[in-house]
Image (cartoon, rainbow, N blue to C red):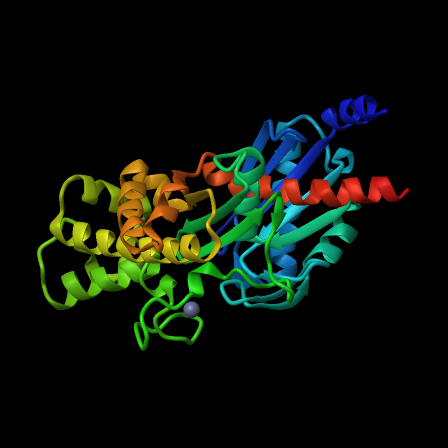
Amino acid sequence: MMERQRAGRGGMLFGGVDIGGTKLHAVVARANGTLLARARKKTKASRGVDAVLDRVQDVLEEACDLARTTVRRLAAVGVGAPSAVTEDGVAVNAPNMGWRNVPLAATLRRRLGRPVAALNDCDAGTLGEAVFGAGRGAGTLVGFFMGTGLGGGIVRRGELIRGENGIAAELGHQIVAANGRLCGCGHRGCLEAYASKTAMARRLAREIGEKGRRSRLEVDGGDYASIGSSLLARAYRAGDPVVREVVDEAAWYLGLGVANLITLLGPDRVVLGGGVFEAFGPRLVARVRKSARAHTFPPASFDDTRIVLSQLGDDAVALGAIAYAMRGETRQAGGR
Ligand SMILES: [Zn+2]
């Protein structure tokens, strides 16, 4: 019976969508994580929730076309969103999207006619790495994803740790400097205010734009926020002193945050992902590791933790959303 169930699931296809502030990324995959197709589209968040959900539907259909299937034939769909998401799939608050209490899973379920599960994007990314990527086999996995912002997640023995309220593990908003830099969340000294692309852009604007330090990254009009991670990585590799200083500082702070998690939880693995790590690769992981080692207590607990680069890259959130949706699908099948 088990064998038959497993064989049946092997033939099932799942859809996953990473709803980002600027772009949507959809994949179609098998239950074992084998990717069949991916598609992308701009989010156009300013057009409102319904317009974004139209585009989510479009990008998923596009991925299905490429995988030679249809949305109707998907066993289930998972979506990751840049928001705290309740267990029944309501996006509570997504500042980048202008969303408040959007019933994401229920609305998409109605539109797609398929079971839909929704979760926070960084929870999805961590779950994706735990099930299909660099976190496979880990007992406790902590994920940090550095892009425009900084998010993270915790997976222990295959389950997301989200606290009794279901919305905890906001790793980017742990405070690493009392009365420090102002964070987008309104608090001061959050890790995200030091270790994110937004934080680095602010420092670049100050060092280059205001202090007039020489850098190959000098931007007309001072719009440092639009600098892509790959351009930043190129300047870093070329030895640009200002970029080195700014990026190394971000890595040092992220190392502090990683050390806090190791000290508190003793994970056996930490995975680092997101656009910035995609662009910088192992070199930046090494900087973070060095800082984490210096700040973990007791020092011996650091030796039990491996800090590794994401394996799933851009697909982590969409694949993690699939892993999450697969569980709901299994629960429903079990309940019938
Ligand atoms: Zn914050």
